[in-house]
Amino acid sequence: MRGTLMANIHLPAPGRPYVLIEADGERAAGDIADDTVVALYKTHGALLLRGFGGGLDEFRAFTARFCATSVFNESPGRDPIDDARNIHSVNRGMDPFPLHPELSREPWKPDVCFFCCFNPPRAQGETTICDGVEIVRHMLPEVRAGLEGRRLFYVQPTWPALLDFWLGTPAPTDAQLAAPPPLCPYSFQRLGGQIARVFSRPALHRPMFNDAPAFGNFLLFSRFYNGVPDFPVLDDARPVPEPWLQSVKATGDRLSAAIAWEGGDLLMLDNTRFMHGRAAIVDADERLIASYFGYLRFALPNSEESADPPWRRTDFRPPMRTPAVLI
Image 1 (tube, rainbow, N blue to C red):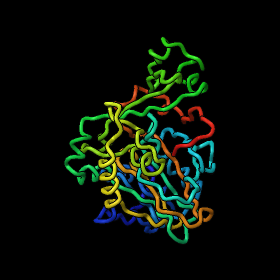
Image 2: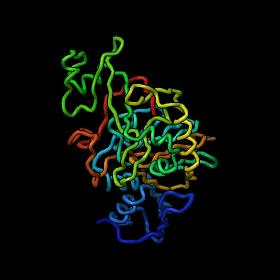
Image 3: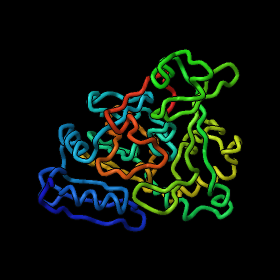
Image 4: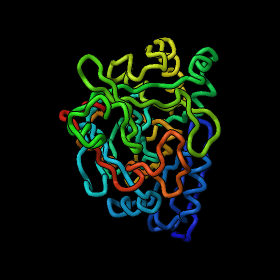
């Protein structure tokens, strides 16, 4: 076990859905015992460590304590900070972002998101977070009834390098498309002369450490940032109805909490339970937040994944498409 000291721990309260852990004589976040962090994370899903200071070395060490592997997010606007460890800046643009779990548009959605503030903005630029369990609890009954028991299907294009990565050939036959290897997380279809990759997830899912249903997927980001109303689609191939999306967005906005960054802040989010977004940014150059997206050493098995998927075996960097357009 690492760490021996006990910081000031403030459990979630109305308007603050995260545990606030404030330094009390500790030199660094590494002074907090591992089992304390793990227990708080499993129960509450969101931890903000404040007042510990530290920089890249401390952030690198903290994430390594809890994650066995990590994943690279190929979305544009991220600068490498420690490329070998998959530590990058967050998107350096200035637009506000709707709520989303990180990489929920792919089958390898990470278990956990870490963010560390190396340089806080002087104004605005807050990160917003929202508990997906609470979204379901406050969801309109007709919306919840419409989503319960349904699945979302993510249909996306392919390119030769991706097909080669998963199928062993950049030009697969119909037989190869119909029988991908066991560790491949996609099925494949020929649509309009192109090969599409497909995977699905429940519209309302169970987080890793909570038995209540949660809302956490790519729908809000796709509709309210990318302007795409039909990604993902429901299991009947129809888009999620616009009134449902508007209702869920309003609920999420109402339940969201804003984190006004201070230098050295470290945020640890259960990416299977919490979504995050951000407020508009005044000066992108002064706001430097490091990110790391990982797979937990203490993760529970995920029935939506194959046994021993590649992203849980080694730091995962799937083939990139140029230009990358998603977040």
